[in-house]
Image (cartoon, rainbow, N blue to C red; front, side, top):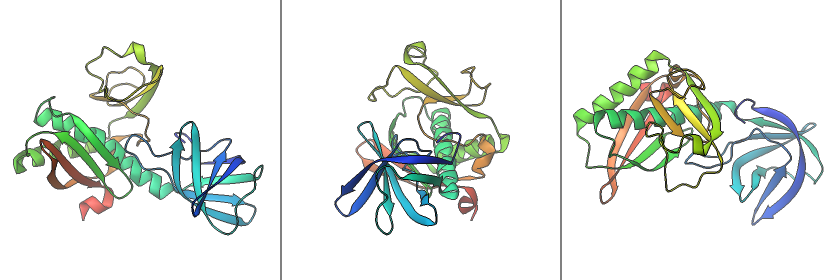
Length: 243
């Protein structure tokens, strides 16, 4: 789903779960919810028949595409898949903006402000981190830094490589509570593609814009406490953020 938003596929298995049906397909451009990013939505077609794909989830090694519509496609059916482009694009803007916020947070405060969780969707982003309350001046400084980088229209790129090759690098954000496989994906902002020399670099499996300028505009709409010593910012991007 990183390079294509549509494809043909075959239904491998049909799963009835409570009042919902889900399909396992032999290939798919749909991103399944993980790493804080919501799953893709879109359409599934067989000829003129159409179903809405309302969510995509990864359960174990299986990718489940939850569908809504009359009847249910049968196992072995040949289908066409189409990711909702507007939904994916909005989500990507928020995901790349999350990385920019993380970088700017460290620039304005310190590296001790570490991530504790996040939500990345088409409607907004949230970012949880351990810190004291941020002053309005610090929030404005973070917001300004992010928007400066957006205006720079910096390259956003990603590279897959063995985890052992970057395990000792302090300049690449790695969350040690997470379990990584032998191969990992580094998303970097700035620098040269594949060179691992960006100003923001994180292990991440999510979808992103190709350049920071695609984000458009970034605005923090709230900052609050969610637990002792843990803060949450909520932010929006694109045209909604400019309103």
